[in-house]
Length: 293
Image 1 (cartoon, helix red, strand yellow):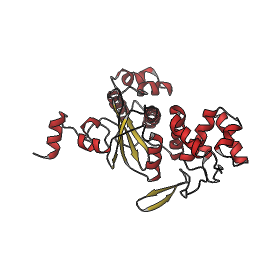
Image 2 (cartoon, helix red, strand yellow):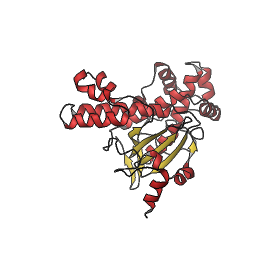
Image 3 (tube, one colour):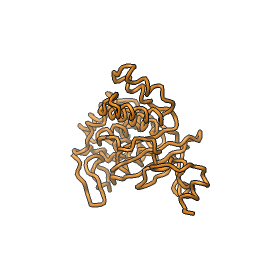
């Protein structure tokens, strides 16, 4: 009997086409790589994957026992599966202006796996434009990534390089996510989580370090708030230490801390010993450095 059949029998997972669902990943493999999000924020893991143009799947088990998965393709999100109902396709299609007749079948579908299949069936039958479906899937992906970025620190996660572990009913083609959209998601993730401990640690480490903004840092794509922009505008004028920046009282301390932490992990500051380019300007792959416009 093959090893694959033994694993399926042990986990009571019926045979299926395509990658196995998250729960069918061999438990011995998961235990070797599991960590808590409190050990390293998800935004940092995603930035590392982005730097290396990594392809694979990150799986999560939250404190309630629900499992989720995020597929990465060349370093950017390409698909996500959540056990909670996040951004149902029927509701997204309705918000995009489609009529009840066009979205009724999708909205009546029970659960994310079925609304995906129903929407695909409608597209094949010509009742749902393919470009509309793909845009709805992009909106759904971003909402699910935001949900994953908001998971609590006691959530377990595992990285599976080179594997697509999304269940077989999921959209097989990768969903498009630009690098600018990826950086916006990272910024949103830092805001949503607040990340009090990493932010406080960063402020402490940089309290006496002048924060010089790098000229090639793609700040404009982050979609900063007005308060965040005030902090960045000051740094464009003068290189202040983290202590001096907080003392200027340009924005609430939490907002200033978010900017210092976010720009640090994105390598937007010229910091001692950091020779890598800002995130979003150059990325590495197996064949060398890839320039991204």
